[in-house]
Length: 491
Image 1 (cartoon, rainbow, N blue to C red):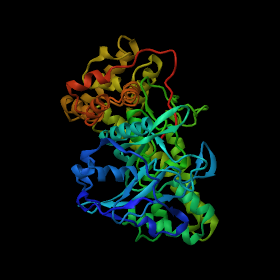
Image 2: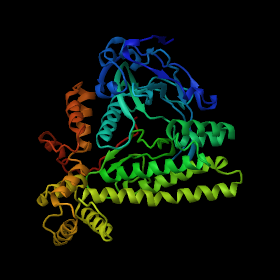
Image 3: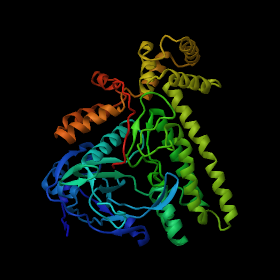
Image 4: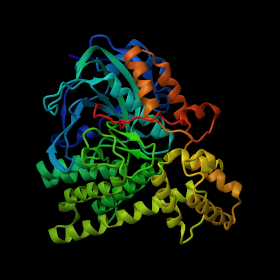
C-alpha cells in the first residue's frame, strides 16, 4: 500500500472535483510504489506559482510524492476513462500509465490538475506496464516548457524522477515518472467516451462540470452546451494557429490528445520544423502524413466535429436540429483559425494594419521558402534583423522583388519601421527546441547522466524572444543528413 502522509509544509492544497463526477469517468487506485526514487529535475518557478515549497519538494518526502510512494493529504488518486479516434479509428482508451492525484488550488485561487505519468498499471493499461522511460519524460519536460516560453497554451512539467527500476521497451531503459500540471485533463475523447458508453445524464454531468471549470460565464447562457462547443472551437482555432506560426508539429492529433481547455497535451512524436514544407512529418507511425504540419488545421476541425457529435443530445432534443446547430458551429472554425493565423503572420512581418494583398504577400514568401528549402524559424529571424544574407532565399530574383514589395507595404503604415521590427522581434522566436539540440540533451542525460546539457537548453528556451548572445549557437541548423529525422511515441 502507498503510505498517505500530510506534508503540510510542502504547500499541497488539493481538491478533487473531478472525483465528484459519476463513477463512469474514472477508477480510484493508488500508484504502485517504486524502490529508490531520485529527483532529476524540478521546475522551481512553476512550483512557486502553484503555492508549493521548493525546498520541501526536494526533500525525501517531496520526492516520494513525485514517485507515487507517498500521497499528499486530501489527494484521491484516480485514472481517467476516455475514448478517442486514433489515426481515424475509434477505440476505448483511458489513463493507461497516468494517475490524477487531485487539483492544486493556488494561492490565487486557480485550479490545476496534478498528474503522475508512469506510476504503474491501471484498468486502462491495455496490456502495458503502466510505466514510463526517462528519455520520453525528459522530452515532454523540455518541449512543454519550451511551448510555455513561446506563449503557447500547454500542459506543463513540474518534476521528473527516476524510479530505481528499469522498463523494457525495444531495449532496457531507465524508469521515470513525470509530474504534469494542466488546466484539466478533460479531452474530446472524454466526451466521446460519455456519448458512447454513458447515459445522457452522465454526458450532461460532464458538460456541466466542464462549463463550471473552464467556461463559467457560458454556463448561464440560453444554450450553455452550444456555448461550450463554440468556446472549445474558439480555443482550438487559436491554439492551432499558434502551432503553425512557430512550425510546431504535434505528430499525433488523435481526439484523445485534444483538450477542452485549449492546451497542448501529450508530447509524444512532436517536433519543430526546420526546412519549411507543409508536408513535413516526423512521427515514425504516421506513414501517410495524416498529421503533417500542413494538415493540422484540417485535423483540428475533424476532431471538433467529433466533439460536436458527442454533444448532440445536449444541443437540441430534435436530432436533426442538433446536427444543424453543430454544423453551423463547426463551420466557424476555418474562419477563426485563418483569422488568428493571418494576424500572427502579419505580426511576424511587422504589419500593424490590414491590407488586401497581405495574404498573397505571405503566401509568396512561404512558397519561396518551400522552393529553396529555407529554414522556417531562421528566415523570419533574418527578416527581423534585415540580415537577408542569412536566408536561403538571398540572391534570388524573386526574393529581391518580394522584399521590395514587403518594404513598400510596411512603409505605408503610420507606425515607423523601427516599431515594425520591434513587433517582428516579439513575434519571431530567436530559438526553438531544435530537434538535434533536444536529442543532444536527451543523449547526455540518459546515456551519460549529464543533465547540464538539458539545463542549458532549458535556460535558453525559457525566453525565446530575448535574442540574447547565449541563444545564437542554439539557432544553428543541424548537419545535413541523408536520413529524415524521426520521432517515436514514447510519452
